[in-house]
Length: 209
Ligand SMILES: Cc1cc2nc3c(=O)[nH]c(=O)nc-3n(C[C@H](O)[C@H](O)[C@H](O)COP(=O)(O)O)c2cc1C
Image 1 (tube, helix red, strand yellow):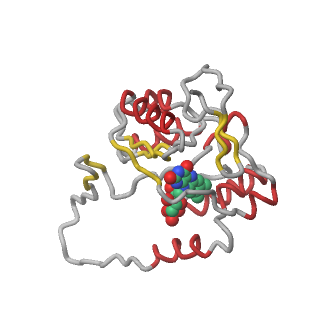
Image 2 (cartoon, protein in one colour):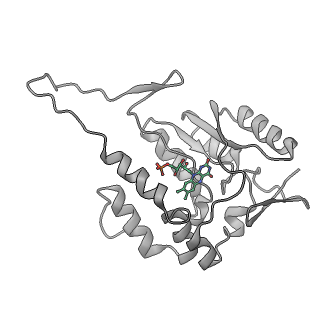
């Protein structure tokens, strides 16, 4: 990056410069006409910060709690998959950053790094595990057990993906996550993918069971 990012848009501009078309489309765009993507951004603009003047601001505290855990400000990291396609450090760096900012990191089931590696990268960090419910319930069960063993504090269950959204950029660029980002499915480092595969929308996700 030429200069340090000042706001989130700066990260996006940087991504436009450094990422290949496939991953860029995945991280930058939304489904179909992107109506929800635009509406989500607009929703933030409807929040207003009410100024209060003539108050003692010598000590300001933005901290709050989530599921009983204190975080330093009311923003957490939502799950996003295949972060290894954005940077080789992938989810490890994101988990460490969330820990340094004293907020919660949510690790996606579709991560480029293993549950165990992400956990040991920020062992004292507050971390939730985002779970898809697989048709093969054994896979789901194994993911839950591993997340629990690795010290994740909660599950975030995603229920809106009975099939994958139609993401036009991904279709046009024929994007499939790179093997480095894709085959892991949060597997322990060094563990070879099993022969079985799960068909997940247009992506084929290796199954380690
Ligand atoms: C590039 C990208 C990847 C995502 N990957 C996941 C995922 O793996 N699991 C999940 O539950 N949600 C995933 N999401 C959804 C986000 O966690 C979030 O719910 C959604 O982007 C809406 O929040 P926003 O308006 O702040 O973007 C992803 C979103 C984006 C943009």
